[in-house]
Image (cartoon, rainbow, N blue to C red):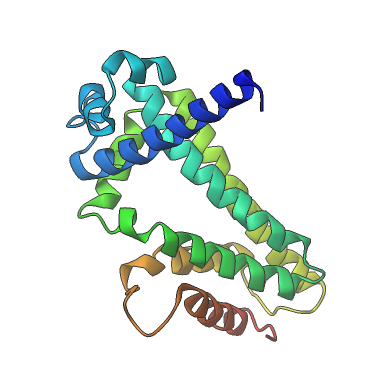
Length: 205
């Protein structure tokens, strides 16, 4: 491995460490209560070293949210390659649920929903629009699957938009009740949600 490749790998590794620590502190202390110095101290690096990776706290906050959202959206894409709308919806729901359960430690932080809104409000209009567009992509993709299912005669849905947001709401807040030490694994919960959603749209599992 070349020296340049090693350096790039180290830089990427440090970037991921910074984003992980920053996300934890942002959710624990809020945007205003988290300084770049505090993030640097948690990482045991100097503030100038932190600024080498991210030029501002706002940029760091945006990248932390963006990276998490990007991983989530990318994790849903394989579901759309399934052969039928029923299989696509089933895989989409399972991927959505399991992804949210993997985020549950952060999402269960007291006041997390309010903190997230605060973090987003701290961003520029352009940054917020980027995040909004990523979220709209998920809505559009799910709505498209449901429409294809109706057209193919696989689903019985009176209002596709209502069903789209009902499914998203179900999956989005699964972390509220999930107990990682309970009897159900993340995958098992995903399977349960698959059955519930297919029953909702009149599909066959």
